[in-house]
Length: 293
Image (tube, rainbow, N blue to C red; front, top):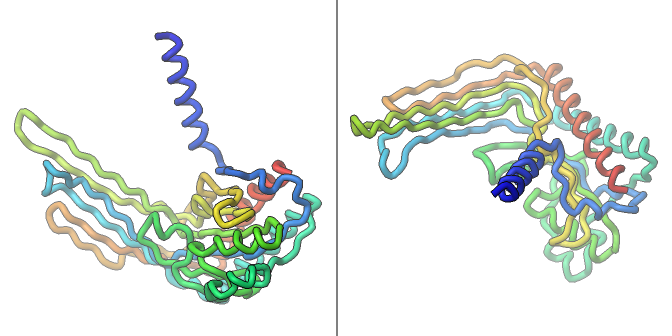
């Protein structure tokens, strides 16, 4: 029994450590002994809307509580997004060079085999809803590529792997998601067996602060289904709203509530906060890349 308890405690500690790490690393040895970093694309996605719900309904509680909160970020101009992206890219390259890396561009389409070129997706300098977080939330984003170089969406990044297999290189793609805060959803249910009643409560709160979201980071491509990952595992953030936060709409009907918040950004503060978190994320990623080498 003692040995079993020890094993369970070890598993618990290992699991806890996994989720408390600042970075998520997987197959990162793809970058081992790599001295030239070939950047296929550097993309920053900016959130303009996110919605999240909390729902306590279940099979035995169809009349449970529901809450829904939408946050719209207003005032992020194309010029501001491009400026932030380009400066974040420059900082990333500078930090690579400080670690004695050689840095060069990598053209995905040019390195595809002749047979694969026909399937290459369209590339754009600006794209809508192309970030990695689409599968995790109701979110709207605008993706900007460094130096206005056309790029591919996150769901077709694997073409970099096709190109890598053909050329024999290990190019990287860098994908960041910037949000103006975090939506925290909570739902609880208390069952009173004596009275035969179920008490439900739900809440969605907005925690303002410009941040780099979880799973942003570096993919190092060897082939389509093989890429090393060095990703942000804990949001990198600056606390406090980057502008004026106001209530736009609010509805409350019995156990259902829905609200919409508008964040009218202060462009200078948003610019400073976004660069602060991106530079911090750059440092974490580049240091991890250098540790692998």
